[in-house]
Length: 560
Image (cartoon, rainbow, N blue to C red; front, side, top):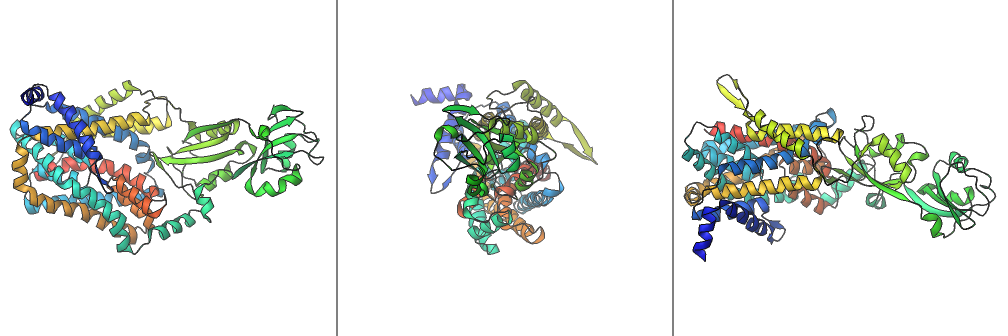
């Protein structure tokens, strides 16, 4: 039986690839406290283990899977990447540049001390910084080196080993640093700091933090008395702009909203009103009553992508004040997300193009607001495969182009070219959704499967040479991994706090984003009880995804 399985794996390497993925994902789910390896590291480790039997896995598979991953990353980051290139986010962009430059410097310093080859150095960066994209772009760069195939295979094997050795501390170390060490170094109480930032962003009470309604709307039913009788709905709303009449029940018959309808004594009206107006409604309309039928008027929910030049860059409070009149009544915000992460629902939270505002309220008002703010994101599960496949082709061709700076050849590589094109397509799609649709679930599948499969293939290709490489540089890589994991965030921490003057909560989110590590941001959110770190995370995540990917070829060239 064992001989049959081994023969099947050797003769059908695709079986080995999927076996490594399956076992790696299962291994990655195993938790020790709050820590787990994750799918990519698990797949790479299982690939290394299975690869010990000696397999001939097509090298092209590695490139195919990496292209799927890097394309999804670029598409998702495109709107935020280009949207962050403005004066309002300059500090966060600069923060990412400093952290990535420090990380590159730390990798090259440890390379100079221990004389790693290009494979060890690239794997060190990818594992210690928990950014597998470095390994992908470095692999493309290795393929372009004027070396024999056996030498290239050895470099790729070394890269996989270095990644496996340094990844564990890279993940745990960053979570501990961002969640525990950094706040202590700055003397920051996370909950108190989060509360302080929430106050700066316009919150005055815990009730407001839980839910910031778009127009602070409440729903009430009132029986019309002589004071409002004889007035049209439009007249009442003109006199009292903090309320709107949504439904009228007269003689047991339900009448939907009609601004020209004249109210009569005894009518039961369903009303939307601002919270501060509730106490005056009996004087304006009549006695409040419990009448479910009058309050069962239709509502609508929609996800609106902010594309308006007028409102992009404005705070929630500014947007609310600009959207005046009854057309905005009856709507409130459920969530605001940026790159799939929820922003704090605070009055002074600044919104940017590409942010998704989830609204619920009167159908006509939701439609009117959508027309002013941007566009409704359709809940479609169809992907524009033609556009995305063509994008990968164009990216690959772009990556193959080369130029020279002096005597040094410069090219993006396949991964870099695909990333650039994906950024552009993602940005364009955020403004023109009819072109290049790629739903969030499809993005996740491209990214997660592509990266996990890439890790599995890298591990399988490393093969039996892995043991010897581990014995050769294992200790040096462990030491180097600690340095590369801790030095960049340490430098960036003090730079962000004392040079850029970032608020601690934004700073901690930026630290996690600049190292493309969502787990450490989630830790900060958990410890602080606030979503405010997301404000710093998204910009830095988008910028660093590009900068760290570019570091791969630089590391290979500098280590050659």
